[in-house]
Image: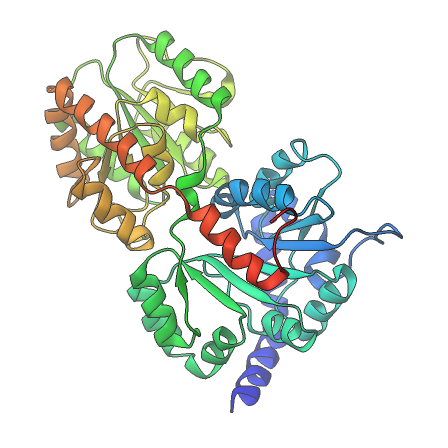
Length: 429
C-alpha cells in the first residue's frame, strides 16, 4: 500500500511539472534568480573534484532554516574536520543567505539546490554527491528523496523538527504516504515534546526532543552595531517595528496607527519576502505617508513617518533599533515568523493570535514576560501606545526577552549527539 501511494504521488508530480515550471517563471518575474541553476532542480550538477572528501549534507529550505542552521554548521565542521558539508536549499533567498557562510568556512562548504522530489532527480542527486548522512531541517518531508536515500543506505534525520496541530491534520489526509516516509528516517529530533508527539502519531519512530536550534543563533555583532548606529541617528523617537510582515498586515497596521497616540512615533516595516518590497512602498505612497526606504541609503528624518526595511540579512539590526516589535504573520493566519531572533536581540514583542508555527516558543515568551498577546492590529496599536507611555515596562520586557533567549540554548549540542549515532563518535571523543 505504501509503495502504491509513493507511485501515485510520483505520477502526480510528473503530471504537475508544467505547472511547477510556470510557477518558477512567475516567481522569476520579481526574483530572476529563480531561473538560475535550473539543472540542479532536476538533479544535474557540475562535476565534483576527483578527490572529494567525505560529505555531510544539510538541507535548509530557505532563509529562516539556513540562519537557524548556522551554529550546527559550525559544530559539524569542527567535529568532522576531514569532511566537507553540502548545504542545499529550495529558494534563491535561502541560497543567498547560505552563501554568507561560505566565507567563514573557506573550501569546506558547498551549495546546491535540492532537486524536485522526483525519483530520477533524487537518485541523480544522491549518486552525484554520495553523502555520508542527510539532515533535513524542520518539516522537509520529501517521500521520494527519503525513499531513494533508504535504498542507498544513506541515513537520514529530520532535525529541529516541528509539526503544528494544523499541519498534523493536513498530513493525516496523506498518512499512507507520509507515515512510511517518517518511519524510514533514521532519527527525528523535535523542537518540543508536543512536536515529537505529533510526529510520532504521524509515523515517526521514537522521536527525541532536542530544543530549537534558533535559540543557539547569536545575533551578528556587526548587525547589532548597525542597529545602534540607526538608533543614534533616530534619537529619542519611539520606534515600533512590524517585523517580517505578510500580505495584508501592513494595511491593517497603518489603519490602526493613529490609535497609538504617539506624535513622533517612527514605524519601521520590514516585509517578510523581498518580492513584496515594491508593493509595500506603493501602499505607503498611496496613503501619502512620509516614508523612506532602507535601499535608498537614507536614514529616517524628523519628518519620516515610516521607514521601509527593504533589505535582506539585517533583521537583527532592525530589532536593535526598535523599542517594540509586532511579529509579522501573527496578525493574519500565516502562523507567525521567528520570534527567537527578536528575543536574542532583547526586543520586546507583541504577538497576534496566529502563532501556530512557533506555538511553544510563543507561549513561553508570553509566560516569562518577553511578549504580550494581542487579538488584532487595532489592539496592537492600543497596547503599543500604553507601553510607549511606560518606558520602565518596556525595559522589563527587554530584560525578560534576553533571559528567555539565554534559558533555551543547548539544542546544537543535543542535535550533535544525535548525529553521532548516525555517523559514529566525533574525532577526539
